[in-house]
Image 1 (tube, helix red, strand yellow):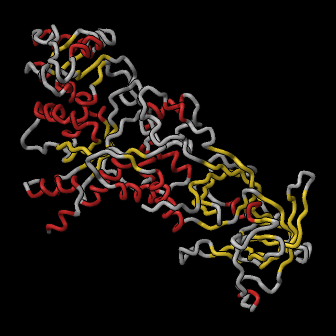
Image 2 (image 1 turned 60 degrees about the vertical axis):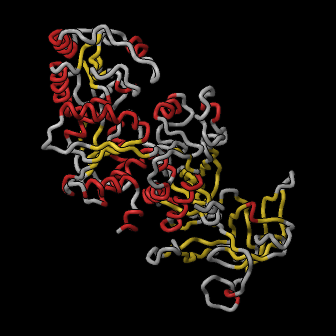
Image 3 (image 1 turned 45 degrees about the vertical axis):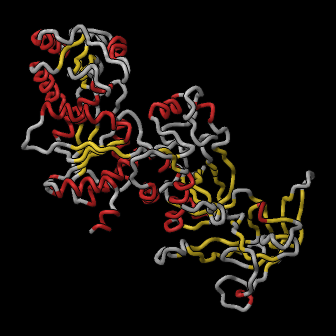
Length: 556
């Protein structure tokens, strides 16, 4: 039992302790509560995997709740994208809920707090309120409205709700402690006037609850047992608990907020505000640009749900923040794609190869494995002919013994086909090789069982038949930023670190089967890397995104 406890992460240990102290297993409930003001990114996947993972571990329901308390920035588009991303990651929520479901209850509780002398209407501008709060080592200054009569606050608060006052002219504040060293307890704002239509409630409300007030009470209304959030909310916990104390019924479960370290990945930014700038200033093509750390961008680039979940599992649940190397993310997707990606042949920097002794006009369809890592992946046939394309880097006129690809006078095997020998080359006026001429051993066909087919040569090359090849656009993606922590320096705009070579498009050729693959289908371009078909593809113009290179020296 002791060893089992040691294997638990600190959140699991908290839950186990709560169960030992009387929490019933059917009272365990979690939630993932995004604000619908942008697309989910790699940082959110940690919270998603933690909450839904715990739901699976304890056979407990997990709500998907949208903390939609700011109509200025929230849109239905973001709600839809969040639902799609969570589903794509492989998780199912118990209930789809919204903080806006509770606007009336939150308002009624706020009225009750005014009646109890625990909240008041302040007519000062937000700038003055902020200045009066001072700093953790200096006591705050009480608002001149702090002790106004209850009836006055009740009247003003109702008129705020009815839309009688201008935005910014007044707010409702909790009356807590203006000398607390925790700044969140210095009479925080509970409601502000905001005359903006809400994506769900329309124009029904002219005041909106602040996040801290709505969030904990929403947890309570949903009877969430463990409210798990990132470390930045640790100093909000006393306020979370204070608000709960104002409405708590002993017959119900009191949510317990606990914090884990947020996830920072090198060469990535996970600030929604900064991601919005990337989109607004057209540094990227949109929220789903494959260079973006958004889940939609990663999906478009070719990441699989399993690769992201495995990455999160490797990162683990910690109490301290640290910088995760992007190579670990690449390792995780490479590991999964090796298992699931179909092997195909494509040439990204082609040079023509003509097999002079292969009969003109003849073609063969050669059987090749779809994925040797999967027993049931099956095979397909690829066309072979006299004229082929191979990679330019796979040929040298002269090379030493460590070059195991094709050279003049040397032999290699063509994948699933024949052994060939390079005889001569043809060049253009600039000395660039335009054509390689070779001969083949007609008895060396792979899988034919002849003595010649079993002959060993050191190199094996991929290729495509020139007359059957389909032209493709291949997008090669690199890190969006040139430095590990682009937003680490406060005085330097992170956009200064944009990598001008983060995407390049090259023309290549691929085997004809690629015409029929689905958008997002994982592929391995043999000997090159992992790719996927992009949504920009048309019947006449196929586009493939590189997900990750084929190999890397990184070890987790």
